[in-house]
Length: 72
Image (cartoon, rainbow, N blue to C red; front, side):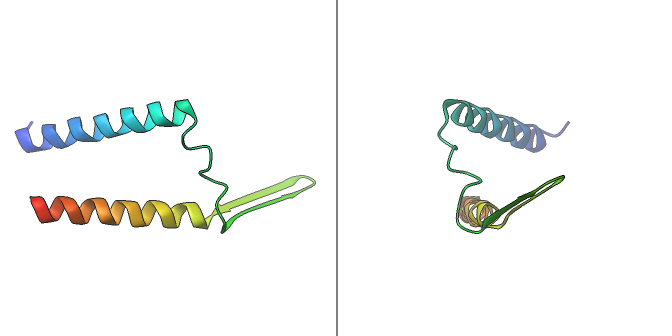
């Protein structure tokens, strides 16, 4: 395996580990309850559309990738 690919896999793994630890401690309890997250419950039917949460993820990932491109 190429060394750059291995480095990226290690970074992704560390990121997922940190995100998992933060989620386990309850720091992401607000996530999924943002304005724009639609949750419809009816008898025999449940629909969830996390538009607000996906917007936050999109902005965060765009900023992170922009920083990575700037410094690499």
